[in-house]
Picture 1 (spheres, rainbow, N blue to C red):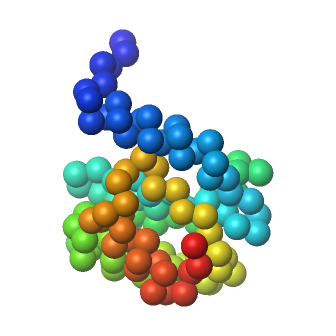
Picture 2 (cartoon, rainbow, N blue to C red):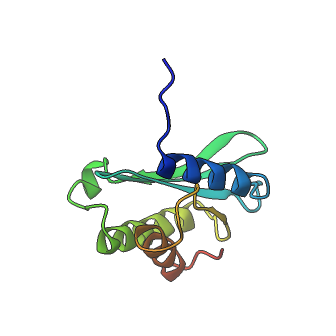
Length: 120
């Protein structure tokens, strides 16, 4: 059964499709994508050439179980993810906000990753 999208979800899906037309991850500059829900945050770095996830982090991991999907929590998660990327020698990424508006939690996550030294 197909779920009928409400207006908010439909607008986000439209933005997501529009963004994904131009944002593409390569081996040199992979795509960092963000997914958020009311309870959790998920971030991945993806090489679209090979279709492989190079690194991932989420609030469902044991180390980040106490982190809430708030602006402060997103900043902490972003810094930790930046450190994880540096360990894997990934210094530059393309940011895919996945249709979410660039403010609040999404912006805090991006800023936290930048503070860790990752270049967008």
